[in-house]
Amino acid sequence: MHPRRPDGFDGLGYRGGVRDDPPFGGPFHARSFGSGTDLGHWVTTPPDIPGSRNLHWGEKSPTYGVPSAPTTLEGPAEELFPGGGDGPRPGPSSEQLNRFAGFGIGLASLFTENVLAHPCIVLRRQCQVNYHARHYHLTPFTIINIMYSFNKTQGPRALWKGMGSTFIVQGVTLGAEGIISEFTPLPREVSHKWNPKLIGEHLLLKCLTYVVAMPFYSASLIETVQSEIIRDNTGILECIKEGIGRVIGLGVPHSKRLLPLLSLIFPTVLHGVLHYIISSIIQKIVLLILKRKTYNSHLAESTSPMQSMLDAYFPELIANFAASLCSDVILYPLETVLHRLHIQGTRTIIDNTDLGYEVLPINTQYEGMRDCINTIKQEEGVFGFYKGFGAVIIQYTLHAAILQITKIIYSTLLQNSI
Image (cartoon, rainbow, N blue to C red):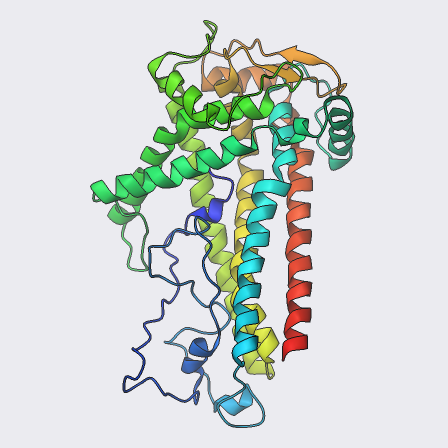
């Protein structure tokens, strides 16, 4: 269990270099760009989108496009910006366009992850919990076909159901993490000077956060896989109502096969923590690679202002994309087991992912996580853990295409403004 945007949390230990600019009019305000250490102050940092990263108020996104303060470039800055002087500085209109474009790039990424990709999430979850299915939909071609069938028989709402509840789960997760970190000594972020104790306390905070959000995640899962044919018109806050009802034992009646929340804590926390650790490590590695690549390109040849702006914005988006992709692929079998345990005994009726126009009940009788793993392996084979994997391929292909399109648009805007 995790928020859709795994970069909603910073990586383990990566905070970047937060600039501490002197106040306006101070003795160091009018400084020249005579060395590579000052290039970071020239690149404009895009505004942070609320909820997209784990920042405290007043902090800024780190600038990844240029080396940090400890690294110095040999030679004057004129090598990077031919023509002498302090290098080109964007005018007021160029700077406004720069900040607006940076905000637009981040917003496009969030929109893709949470809105455009939602039909893929719906199909992916329905395939995962459908133990009846003979077609595993391991490729994107069969997923597109079943998407078309659902849209034709049930309308567009069949592919966008439960989207509001996914936002609620993200909000509960972020809110719970913030509240717990405020009232406990558990650190919300880990700095460069980390130690095993600090890492353990930080992961403990994540574990407690996933436990708090678990009943709401379960309610959101039901909303996304429930067939639109028999689905009632529920409100956007139905997820909160069902989550609280699951905790206190009230609400919609469930069958005796319903697993208690205590038995769901371990698989839920295990999946969430592993997803966070893997995505954090991948994000840090990709950022370091992109940063080194950018630094080498600055040394090898002169860099245009447009390329410097691109290098300041896109590395973090690319790192988040790679981290989310790798963690989703690696943990896909565990996610399949987790979803089947959460959905068992909830009297949920799902769509038939083989035909596209019928409904099926969920009548599994797993005794726990180990029994679920053994049953899937015996009855459905190893590929049974990867049912609906074609939806993941479509989801991240769409995300990569959106990132590339926004980069092209941004480059075109910068070329016209410089």
